[in-house]
Length: 215
Image (cartoon, one colour):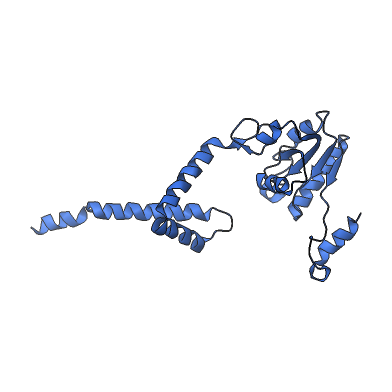
């Protein structure tokens, strides 16, 4: 009898097995959420618990949408932005100004430029920026493809719209020198005082750049 009881304890029942599996799945979800930018352990736990406790339907929709995006979304062969088609809708738009080519770091930067409603040219998305510490140079950013695109006979100006971080500035400098060496015109986004701001509250670096880039 004691032996039978020992064997019973050694073999986990169905409920125990389910509990372990559920725990592992929850840990995997939290770990996956931690991979998002700016999301730490506690934030990931809150999101995971909320989805599972209060909104299972939203969790399923999120899962389906992520799986579909991971399977269907690729890089446009022309501008390297995200697209489900071989060539994205912006590159297919013949009404845009082919004389202008705007270089941005990410598809998110491209979307920000589009939201301004003030740019009607085409784009080239680097999908990153020069970062020697991470082993990312001009070659990894597809500069060869950029040069080929900029020298197609239609582009008259390449607008460098990389970020104003140290790495973004290095990226803009490298691209500017490379383009100019090929006889291509490269310009940089101007930096200035934000619209609606009071000068006394603007940081000194922004004011200095605004003075240099004044017109």
